[in-house]
Length: 275
Image (cartoon, rainbow, N blue to C red; front, side, top):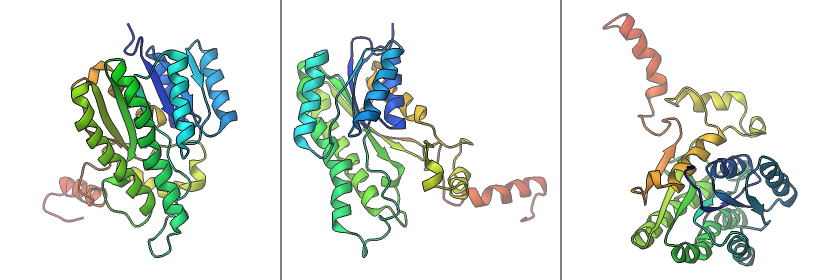
């Protein structure tokens, strides 16, 4: 028996690489999946691909900044498959890094747009999905956050702040609804390699991130998808209110480790000598 047999999952941002891989992973475990995204042609293509692989999926395009669209997507999931058991709040504001550089130069419109997508959107999906979960006896919400919400950085102020809001929302919802059967967790994702990443993060920048990963590789969309499946399933039935890092150990160590590693390796070869 698959982990999610009989469950209905709703995945936002499902036209993207992480969202589409998550929808696939959930479907592979027996879930019926509703995919949603703003990009209707790409969304339809992903949905048709999953259908061709024998999965029970459907899609409805919608704008995560529109409450009416969000209500309509949840209503579509309920009308199509009978309810919502799993909500994966995956959609996020990407592509703004070149403008999200500093506070004195921050366009307030950019700040509001990022908050609307990353924080307001997930809140609204929870608002409309939770009643269905309660009616079905419980459910699991997985919010996709970011490692940038956990530590300071020199850029991405709006992005990091919006993801910190997601973390707070996660803990509050878990506290309010876990006693009623709805578990809520967040994934603090590390750097995930996706198509087109070279344009935003050239190889020498990726190498900086890689040097700080304890697992000697950067992340893939499947790494996030696998954690969503775990949190959606009964394997994690005693896990709620957590912000779980999926980052290859990027945030697990002192910031000096990447620079100190070759020095310490040298000392092991020549004890007592700084190299």
